[in-house]
Amino acid sequence: MQFPLQITFEGLEPSEAIRAHVERQVGRLERLGQPVTNVRVGISIPHRHGRRPAQYRVVLDARVPHMKPVVVRATRSDDVYRCVSEAVESATRVLSAWMSRRRVRRPARRLEGLAA
Image 1 (cartoon, rainbow, N blue to C red):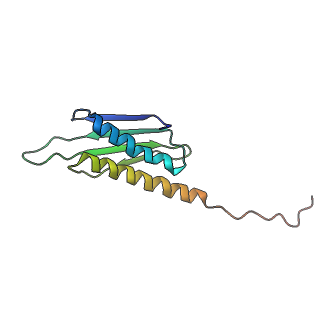
Image 2 (image 1 turned 45 degrees about the horizontal axis):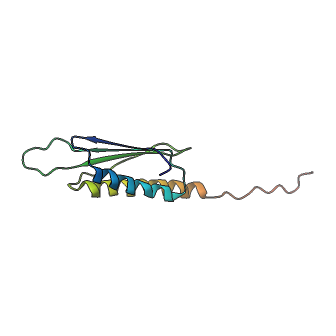
Image 3 (image 1 turned 180 degrees about the vertical axis):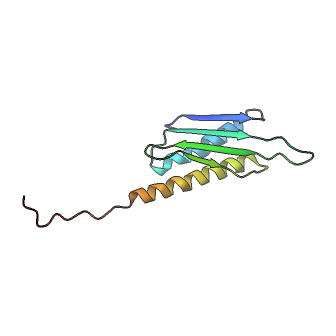
């Protein structure tokens, strides 16, 4: 990856498998062609009540020049890998939509009739 990646874990033990999955998924943002300058991923597991299964939350914060920060909060899921993948897919959609709007070219103004 060309950009710094910061991964934080809250409420669960850091895992190399999860870290590798996040790095692999976030690497997909490089393929968009837009220079991503910084990515922060927060993975948390809130307090469980009773016998409910664990529900993971993922927050992805991507910084791109000339654009507001892209902050994506993945839906709660009992699978942390799926939650990370959904967050990256959502960030990819937001960034690609922004890039397609930015690529729209306006017609060049014609300068007819002006003396040179």
